[in-house]
Image (cartoon, rainbow, N blue to C red; front, side, top):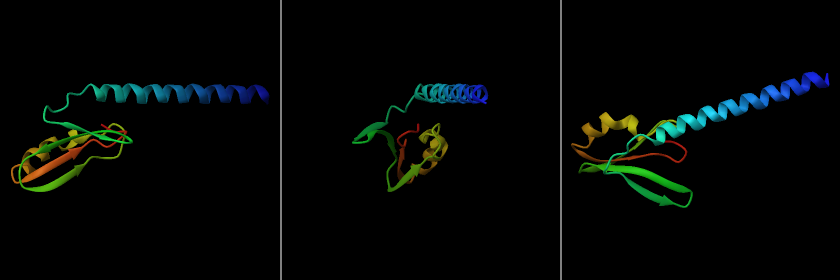
Length: 97
């Protein structure tokens, strides 16, 4: 019984390590994406928030999906259209983008 438990614990630990490595690799790849030159960083007490401001007019705030790999890049084509008549703010939420 003790032997089965140790095998299960080792398997669980190995699985967790593999999942963490996968997540780390994916987020490092996303960090390598080029950010727009017109982007800025807001220094918040919980971390830096990257954002872009485009266009002139009434403001619109675009928020991306809440998965770790999501970013404001999801809105790229929408920003171009909306910025013709609005000021468009697109942010990368903490832990994402």
